Length: 250
Image (cartoon, rainbow, N blue to C red; front, side, top):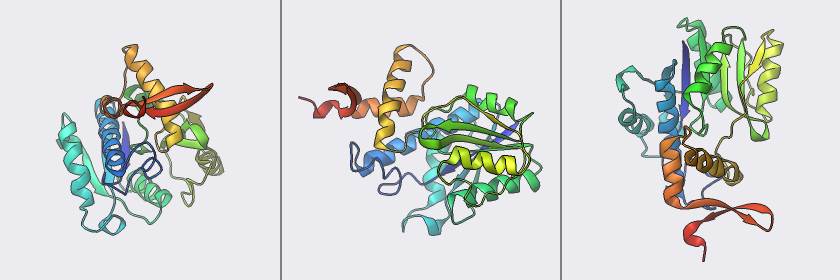
Protein backbone atom coordinates (compact mmCIF):
# COMPACT_ATOMS: atom_id res chain seq x y z
CA UNK A 1 0.00 0.00 0.00
CA UNK A 2 1.42 3.39 -1.02
CA UNK A 3 1.20 6.35 1.32
CA UNK A 4 0.12 9.26 -0.88
CA UNK A 5 1.22 12.59 0.53
CA UNK A 6 -0.81 15.61 -0.59
CA UNK A 7 1.29 18.73 -0.06
CA UNK A 8 -1.38 21.34 0.59
CA UNK A 9 -1.21 25.09 0.98
CA UNK A 10 -4.01 26.78 2.92
CA UNK A 11 -6.67 27.70 0.34
CA UNK A 12 -6.77 31.39 1.17
CA UNK A 13 -7.04 34.42 -1.08
CA UNK A 14 -3.83 35.83 -2.44
CA UNK A 15 -1.72 32.78 -1.53
CA UNK A 16 -2.63 29.99 -3.95
CA UNK A 17 -2.83 29.76 -7.76
CA UNK A 18 -1.40 33.22 -8.22
CA UNK A 19 -0.59 32.41 -11.86
CA UNK A 20 -4.34 32.05 -12.39
CA UNK A 21 -5.50 34.93 -10.21
CA UNK A 22 -5.69 38.27 -11.96
CA UNK A 23 -6.53 36.70 -15.29
CA UNK A 24 -9.81 34.87 -15.71
CA UNK A 25 -10.13 34.35 -11.94
CA UNK A 26 -9.82 36.75 -9.04
CA UNK A 27 -8.03 35.86 -5.79
CA UNK A 28 -11.17 34.53 -4.12
CA UNK A 29 -12.05 32.35 -7.11
CA UNK A 30 -8.49 31.04 -7.34
CA UNK A 31 -8.65 30.05 -3.67
CA UNK A 32 -12.00 28.35 -4.23
CA UNK A 33 -10.65 26.43 -7.20
CA UNK A 34 -7.60 25.34 -5.22
CA UNK A 35 -9.80 24.05 -2.41
CA UNK A 36 -12.00 22.15 -4.89
CA UNK A 37 -8.94 20.47 -6.40
CA UNK A 38 -7.53 19.69 -2.95
CA UNK A 39 -10.74 17.94 -1.94
CA UNK A 40 -10.98 16.00 -5.22
CA UNK A 41 -7.38 14.78 -4.94
CA UNK A 42 -7.79 13.75 -1.31
CA UNK A 43 -11.01 11.94 -2.12
CA UNK A 44 -9.31 10.13 -5.03
CA UNK A 45 -6.61 8.91 -2.66
CA UNK A 46 -9.21 7.83 -0.11
CA UNK A 47 -11.09 5.59 -2.56
CA UNK A 48 -7.87 4.14 -3.95
CA UNK A 49 -5.71 1.46 -2.37
CA UNK A 50 -3.42 4.11 -0.90
CA UNK A 51 -3.16 5.74 2.49
CA UNK A 52 -3.83 9.48 2.66
CA UNK A 53 -1.36 11.80 4.35
CA UNK A 54 -2.13 15.51 4.09
CA UNK A 55 0.93 17.71 4.64
CA UNK A 56 0.12 21.31 5.51
CA UNK A 57 2.48 24.28 5.64
CA UNK A 58 4.05 25.45 8.92
CA UNK A 59 2.68 28.71 10.35
CA UNK A 60 5.79 30.71 9.42
CA UNK A 61 5.27 29.96 5.72
CA UNK A 62 1.70 31.24 5.37
CA UNK A 63 0.09 34.70 5.60
CA UNK A 64 -0.28 36.24 9.05
CA UNK A 65 -3.44 35.20 10.84
CA UNK A 66 -3.89 31.98 8.88
CA UNK A 67 -4.00 28.67 10.73
CA UNK A 68 -2.57 26.38 8.05
CA UNK A 69 -3.67 23.15 9.71
CA UNK A 70 -7.26 24.25 10.29
CA UNK A 71 -7.52 25.78 6.81
CA UNK A 72 -6.68 22.40 5.29
CA UNK A 73 -8.00 19.92 7.86
CA UNK A 74 -11.53 21.32 8.11
CA UNK A 75 -12.57 21.14 4.42
CA UNK A 76 -10.71 17.88 3.80
CA UNK A 77 -12.33 16.21 6.81
CA UNK A 78 -15.76 17.23 5.59
CA UNK A 79 -15.08 15.84 2.11
CA UNK A 80 -13.85 12.40 3.17
CA UNK A 81 -16.11 9.46 3.91
CA UNK A 82 -13.71 8.11 6.56
CA UNK A 83 -11.85 11.18 7.83
CA UNK A 84 -10.46 9.29 10.81
CA UNK A 85 -8.25 7.26 8.47
CA UNK A 86 -6.46 10.30 7.05
CA UNK A 87 -3.28 11.63 8.62
CA UNK A 88 -2.48 15.34 8.88
CA UNK A 89 1.11 16.41 9.48
CA UNK A 90 3.09 19.61 9.12
CA UNK A 91 5.60 19.98 6.30
CA UNK A 92 9.28 20.39 7.16
CA UNK A 93 11.65 22.30 4.88
CA UNK A 94 12.16 25.72 3.32
CA UNK A 95 11.72 24.62 -0.32
CA UNK A 96 9.16 22.44 -2.05
CA UNK A 97 11.79 19.84 -2.96
CA UNK A 98 13.04 19.87 0.61
CA UNK A 99 9.55 19.36 2.00
CA UNK A 100 8.91 16.46 -0.35
CA UNK A 101 12.30 14.94 0.44
CA UNK A 102 11.87 15.21 4.21
CA UNK A 103 8.46 13.58 4.10
CA UNK A 104 9.40 10.79 1.69
CA UNK A 105 12.67 9.97 3.44
CA UNK A 106 11.08 10.00 6.89
CA UNK A 107 8.29 7.64 5.87
CA UNK A 108 10.58 5.24 4.04
CA UNK A 109 13.38 5.14 6.61
CA UNK A 110 11.73 5.91 9.94
CA UNK A 111 8.23 4.48 9.58
CA UNK A 112 9.09 1.52 7.34
CA UNK A 113 6.50 2.54 4.76
CA UNK A 114 7.06 0.49 1.60
CA UNK A 115 6.32 3.19 -0.98
CA UNK A 116 5.50 6.90 -0.82
CA UNK A 117 4.04 9.27 -3.40
CA UNK A 118 4.02 13.06 -3.44
CA UNK A 119 1.27 14.98 -5.20
CA UNK A 120 -0.19 18.48 -5.16
CA UNK A 121 -3.82 19.59 -5.32
CA UNK A 122 -3.14 20.97 -8.79
CA UNK A 123 -3.04 17.37 -10.03
CA UNK A 124 -6.74 17.83 -10.64
CA UNK A 125 -7.26 14.75 -12.82
CA UNK A 126 -5.49 12.32 -10.50
CA UNK A 127 -7.88 9.44 -9.94
CA UNK A 128 -8.09 6.05 -8.29
CA UNK A 129 -6.98 4.18 -11.40
CA UNK A 130 -3.79 6.24 -11.75
CA UNK A 131 -2.98 5.92 -8.05
CA UNK A 132 -3.46 2.17 -8.04
CA UNK A 133 -1.56 1.75 -11.32
CA UNK A 134 1.37 3.65 -9.84
CA UNK A 135 1.31 1.43 -6.75
CA UNK A 136 1.60 -1.63 -8.98
CA UNK A 137 4.51 -0.09 -10.90
CA UNK A 138 6.30 0.74 -7.64
CA UNK A 139 6.53 -2.98 -6.90
CA UNK A 140 9.16 -3.32 -9.60
CA UNK A 141 10.51 0.23 -10.04
CA UNK A 142 12.15 2.45 -7.45
CA UNK A 143 10.55 5.61 -8.82
CA UNK A 144 7.32 6.19 -10.76
CA UNK A 145 6.57 9.55 -12.35
CA UNK A 146 3.39 11.01 -13.82
CA UNK A 147 4.42 13.53 -16.50
CA UNK A 148 2.52 16.75 -17.13
CA UNK A 149 2.89 19.48 -19.74
CA UNK A 150 6.00 21.67 -19.65
CA UNK A 151 8.18 19.02 -18.04
CA UNK A 152 6.14 19.08 -14.83
CA UNK A 153 4.87 16.07 -12.88
CA UNK A 154 1.49 15.38 -11.34
CA UNK A 155 2.70 12.32 -9.42
CA UNK A 156 6.05 11.21 -8.03
CA UNK A 157 6.28 7.85 -6.27
CA UNK A 158 9.29 6.46 -4.45
CA UNK A 159 10.31 3.07 -3.12
CA UNK A 160 13.75 4.37 -2.12
CA UNK A 161 15.01 7.86 -1.25
CA UNK A 162 16.92 9.94 -3.80
CA UNK A 163 18.92 13.15 -3.55
CA UNK A 164 16.03 15.57 -3.19
CA UNK A 165 17.98 18.82 -3.16
CA UNK A 166 16.66 20.91 -6.08
CA UNK A 167 15.03 17.73 -7.39
CA UNK A 168 11.98 19.65 -8.63
CA UNK A 169 14.04 21.98 -10.80
CA UNK A 170 12.58 22.55 -14.27
CA UNK A 171 12.04 20.30 -16.19
CA UNK A 172 10.93 18.36 -13.13
CA UNK A 173 10.21 15.04 -14.81
CA UNK A 174 13.73 14.95 -16.24
CA UNK A 175 15.39 16.14 -13.03
CA UNK A 176 13.63 13.54 -10.88
CA UNK A 177 14.45 10.83 -13.41
CA UNK A 178 18.13 11.81 -13.36
CA UNK A 179 18.22 11.72 -9.56
CA UNK A 180 16.57 8.30 -9.56
CA UNK A 181 18.92 6.77 -12.11
CA UNK A 182 21.92 8.35 -10.35
CA UNK A 183 20.77 6.44 -7.25
CA UNK A 184 20.65 3.22 -9.29
CA UNK A 185 16.85 3.05 -9.29
CA UNK A 186 14.62 1.87 -12.13
CA UNK A 187 12.10 4.48 -13.31
CA UNK A 188 8.64 3.90 -14.73
CA UNK A 189 5.99 6.32 -15.92
CA UNK A 190 2.26 6.84 -15.72
CA UNK A 191 0.27 8.19 -18.67
CA UNK A 192 0.62 11.94 -19.09
CA UNK A 193 -2.09 14.06 -17.46
CA UNK A 194 -2.54 17.80 -17.08
CA UNK A 195 -2.07 19.90 -13.99
CA UNK A 196 -3.93 23.14 -13.35
CA UNK A 197 -1.56 25.88 -12.25
CA UNK A 198 -1.63 28.59 -14.92
CA UNK A 199 -3.99 30.28 -17.33
CA UNK A 200 -2.53 28.25 -20.17
CA UNK A 201 -3.40 25.04 -18.30
CA UNK A 202 -7.07 26.03 -18.49
CA UNK A 203 -6.92 25.56 -22.28
CA UNK A 204 -6.19 21.85 -21.74
CA UNK A 205 -8.05 21.07 -18.53
CA UNK A 206 -11.41 22.75 -19.19
CA UNK A 207 -12.19 21.05 -22.54
CA UNK A 208 -11.01 17.71 -21.17
CA UNK A 209 -13.22 17.95 -18.11
CA UNK A 210 -16.22 19.02 -20.17
CA UNK A 211 -15.67 16.25 -22.72
CA UNK A 212 -15.25 13.57 -20.06
CA UNK A 213 -18.32 14.83 -18.23
CA UNK A 214 -20.34 14.80 -21.45
CA UNK A 215 -19.21 11.22 -22.09
CA UNK A 216 -20.17 10.14 -18.54
CA UNK A 217 -16.54 9.35 -17.67
CA UNK A 218 -14.89 9.93 -14.31
CA UNK A 219 -14.13 13.59 -13.55
CA UNK A 220 -13.06 15.39 -10.36
CA UNK A 221 -16.56 16.48 -9.33
CA UNK A 222 -15.82 19.58 -7.25
CA UNK A 223 -13.28 20.97 -9.68
CA UNK A 224 -15.54 20.35 -12.67
CA UNK A 225 -18.53 21.95 -10.96
CA UNK A 226 -16.52 24.94 -9.75
CA UNK A 227 -15.17 25.77 -13.19
CA UNK A 228 -18.58 25.23 -14.72
CA UNK A 229 -20.21 27.56 -12.19
CA UNK A 230 -17.65 30.24 -13.07
CA UNK A 231 -18.61 29.89 -16.72
CA UNK A 232 -15.05 29.09 -17.80
CA UNK A 233 -14.99 27.81 -21.38
CA UNK A 234 -12.47 27.38 -24.19
CA UNK A 235 -13.59 28.64 -27.60
CA UNK A 236 -12.16 28.96 -31.07
CA UNK A 237 -10.54 32.33 -31.68
CA UNK A 238 -9.51 32.46 -35.32
CA UNK A 239 -8.20 28.92 -35.18
CA UNK A 240 -6.62 29.24 -31.73
CA UNK A 241 -8.04 28.14 -28.37
CA UNK A 242 -9.08 30.99 -26.10
CA UNK A 243 -10.27 30.86 -22.50
CA UNK A 244 -13.39 32.92 -21.85
CA UNK A 245 -16.06 33.30 -19.23
CA UNK A 246 -19.59 32.97 -20.48
CA UNK A 247 -20.56 36.11 -18.59
CA UNK A 248 -17.88 38.01 -20.56
CA UNK A 249 -19.29 36.98 -23.93
CA UNK A 250 -21.84 39.12 -25.74
